[in-house]
Amino acid sequence: MNKRNKKLVFVGGGTLGHIYPILPIAHILQEKGYELYFIGSKNGLEKDFLKSISFFKEQYYLEMQGLKRSLSIKNIKTLYLYFKGKNIIKNLLKKWQIDLVIGMGGYISGVVLKAAIDIKIKTIFHEQNVILGLSNKMVKNKINKGLLSFPVEELKNNSKMKIVGNPRTYEIQRKFPNISEKDKTIVIVGGSRGSKKINDIILSIDKKLVNKGYNITLITGNKYYNENKDEILKHSLINIIPFTNHLIDYLSQASLIISRSGATTMSEILALKKVTIFIPSPNVTNNHQEKNALYFVNENAAKMILEKELNEENLLDMIDLLHQNYHERKMIIDNLNRLLQKYNFDNFIMEVENEL
Image 1 (cartoon, one colour):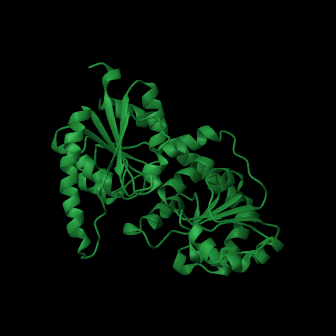
Image 2 (cartoon, helix red, strand yellow):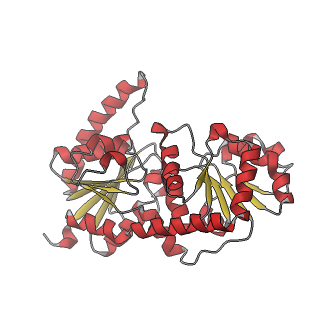
Image 3 (tube, rainbow, N blue to C red):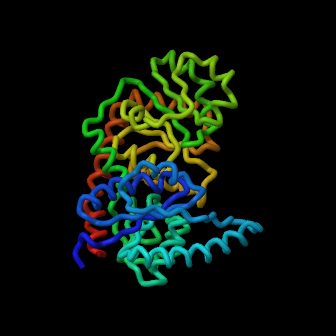
């Protein structure tokens, strides 16, 4: 079969962290002449986000929901949707005559990968975190290839696994080839929904930060902003916004980032080579954000404060340290550069083509 006839399905969803990495890969594969399709979930963020994306010949959105980790009546419906959805996907993959399925994470990814495996279609998954998500864990021994953003301890002796990095890192490097920073400029972002604990502490120390000469941008998340608008208006010394579609523009100018440690955020910070204080969310599956942050911390490429230990004093002390101690800053940036050298985006494309 000619390369131009090869057909690939990308699958992922729930959060955009599973979608952003698809775009740079899809761009290159489309240029190489492959025919691309996408499968996502009806209730995820991906449907609206991908409306204007032209990479895919067809998109399909399946009704699906995640499995509750505790006993729940909702799991009965989840299992029903899983088996129903798997049969739908098997028929769809046959109809599209797909040669390879690439799972990018989220519960929808596990359903589609398993359907593809059942009908002998080749499969690849990409894991963005430093521990396997449930969907990838389900199929780790049955896929043809696993592509990892970072080393995953439980897979270190698995010959099917290759560390290639996160395509989002490549995309940011391409868009921002020359990174600069504004002196004493701090950007604080608590994830897409924001963090009440982080927001509250920043608002309680904003005058101290401004008096020390720091320029502050706090991105609160829409919910927090709307619920605390009256209080926020009292803090005119710093720039406070609920949400932005141009987060990378803010991050690229920062001398320090204070952030959660989701996979997409980590890949962006790595690409921008920014000094960062990670405050992992404690409210995520398998505590994966803390494990993500620990990977950077153990490589001396970031600092971390656990949310349960976060207070005004230790945050102020760490902010000052990371601006006043040149050697500490240089060590972090040098180690981010070192980590970047480990990952080669071309290897991602090469591993995909090797399976075709």
